[in-house]
Length: 227
Ligand SMILES: *Cc1c(COP(=O)(O)O)cnc(C)c1O
Image (cartoon, rainbow, N blue to C red):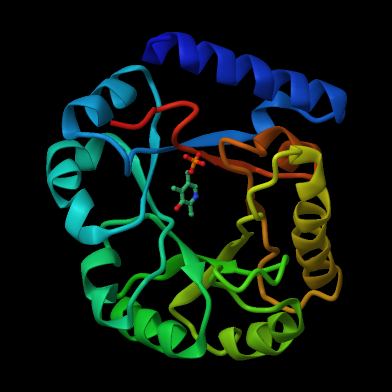
C-alpha cells in the first residue's frame, strides 16, 4: 500500500471506531508520527493534508522542522531531557511528555523567558510497565497540585503509552485509566482550565483508545510507514 492508501484505510478505521463508540468523528485527530522516515516522506505526509506532526528527538527532527515548520503543528512526543527544553519550547506547539517536577520547572522558566504559556500534556504510566516513562497514577494528583503553581504551563491533556499487546483489546484498561484521571481532575476542578486532550493510541491499539476517548491518536508505522 502507498501512503495515500494507508491514510484512507486508517481514516476509515477511525471513523468506524467513532461510530461503534457513539463519538463524533471530528472529536478524534491524527498526529502523524514521522520519526521513522526521511524529510521527503514527511513532506509527502504533509502534502496529503496531515497538519499535526509528532516527533520525539530534536536532533532528528531539526531538518524536518526547518523545511516544514510553518506548514504544520508540531507535537513533541518523546522523553524530554531538561537541557533540551530550550530547543523545543517555541517550536513545538505541544509537549506530550511532561512527567516530572524538574521538567515542569524548566519549561515554566523557558515559557517565562519567551513570555509564552507552554501547552503540555502530562504523561502517565498507567500500566506500570518499567520500560515506560510517566508518572504513576498515585503521583498524578500531587503533581497536578504542583503544576497548578506554574503560570507558564497549561495542562492541555494527558498522554499515555500502552504496552504492546498481541490482542489490542487487552490495552483497554490502560486507556480507560487515563480517561478516568482526566475526568476526575476536571470534576474536582483542580486546574483553572479543564483538561481537554487524551493523547493515546498508536498503530497497534488506536481503535481501542478511540473507544475509550482518545482525542489524539499518534500514528507512525501504520500510517507514515518505516524506512
Ligand atoms: C513512535 C511513537 C509513536 C508511533 O508509534 P507507532 O506504533 O509506529 O504508531 C507514538 N507515540 C510515541 C510516544 C512514540 O514514540
